[in-house]
Image (cartoon, rainbow, N blue to C red):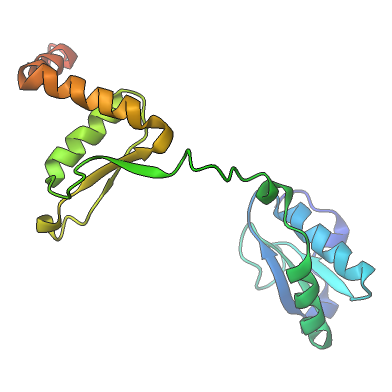
Length: 179
């Protein structure tokens, strides 16, 4: 898997172990090792298993304990401090999505997809919100709050340029074989 040390390989004596932790992200090895070490420091025999062990999904690492230690281990894990990556979450609302097109929910799906394409061509990430199975509910296009002004500008420019400008841009992008 990821070049695990022998201590992390499958231990046959933990066949009856209870899984109390599983991770399959990029830091699975380190996360599981930290949990195993924390449990060991608390006097709980814990075994770290990689995906070479029976029952461990590909790419995952697990920590197992004896059934008698399960409740205590789960309590300790729940009290374990959060990972550094979770502590560095940006709590600002700058990335909250705001509606920039179809505010009243009347935009049709094709219009919303065209607006999303315009925004993405302008370098913005945009998502279409709505269910195409229910066209009477309309569609909305949303961007990150910090990109609202730029998105509105791109939409206004596209509307001002009109359909002739879109056709001209499409022709300019066609290769001679397409004509």
